[in-house]
Every structure is written in C-alpha cells, then in structure tokens.
Figure 1 (tube, rainbow, N blue to C red):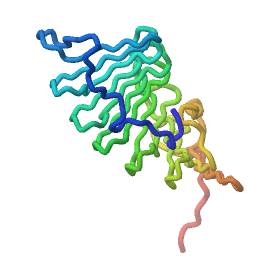
Figure 2 (tube, one colour; figure 1 turned 180 degrees about the vertical axis):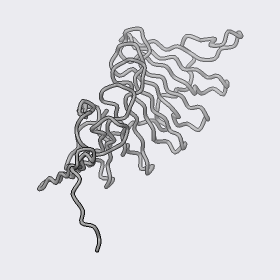
Figure 3 (cartoon, rainbow, N blue to C red; figure 1 turned 60 degrees about the horizontal axis):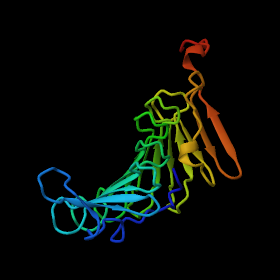
Length: 231
C-alpha cells in the first residue's frame, strides 16, 4: 500500500464516460434495450461503460488497462453525482481483484480501502481517512495472514507521513507496543510479530534520539516476601 500522501483522481474527470455512437452496444440485462457500450482501443486495451438508468451517461465502467483480455478496474458512480463512489482493482495482474476503495461520505474522495495482499480472498489490510482531508491516515495490517490485526500504522500529525506503529507483539489480540518513528515503513511491509508469543508484554517508545523500553514481570514467578505482623 502506498504512502498516505498518494491520491487518486476520481472526481468529475474520472472514467464515467459519456456513451459514444461508434462503440459496440451492450444489452447488460438481456431485456432488448441497450444498457451500455464496449470500446476497444488499437493497443488492445478496452472498457465497457454501462448506463443502467438510461440517462445518456455511464455510471459504471469496467476497463482492461493492460490489454490482456481481463478486467483490471471497475469504477461506479452509484448516486449519479459525477463522482466515483467505489472502485475495485486488480493491481498485480493475476485476474483477481485485490483492492477496493470507497467514498463513503460522497465528498468525491476515497476515505476507506480494503486490500487482499496475498490473493487468498481474505482482507489483510484496511485503510481509512479519519479526518476527511483526502489522505489515508490510519492502516490496520494483518502481516502474517492469520485473520487478526498485527499492527496499526497512523499519521498522527496529518503531515502525510505515517509516524506511529501500534503492534500486538504477543498475538493476544491486544495492542501492547507503540513505536514512534520519523518515517514509518510502508504498512504492507510491517514485520510479522506474532512469533513472539512467549515474549513478556512491553511498552516501547522510540524517537529519533532515544529508545525507552519497560518489561513487565510475570506475576506467576514473583517470589513472595515475608511480612512482619503488625504490633
């Protein structure tokens, strides 16, 4: 997943194409009425634009962007306001969609995304734009693909750079480590920390100059100390 500073153009200029007269007509629902058109480019790329409400403008577009005969991107304007409300993308060319982006508040910017990084059909990462500024600022990552979140990467100061990583180092489902860094790694590259099942709980704060680590003692191995009865 890219840094939160990346943006995607999906406003009025996004490919919700006006239907052209010279494209191949499509009857999507088989009712005998033209619902859209298929456009084939000379380089092998193509897109199909569907106008299911028959207002003359396509609200859903499916595109083959690399010319391999398979759809790589589907975008849809579900409410007809001229902005894409969701997009489904095959980013690695394996003919399986692995990324979905949503504009949940209808402001013209994607504010939520889900990603299947290893192609097993299970979501491995989710990203959110929590302050509606157009940039993703919080990402949850399942780095070992076990179905549980291992780390949350956050841009706390809204400068477009992830700066804090919250991790579950002992895989108990609870965040137990917070690391502050100058430039956090790509969330997709957050290391697998689930192997540290036997490690004691730790709280770590890291800055550019100092590192402070505190380790909790297992209460089951604390030796009882004798007490003196009160007088």
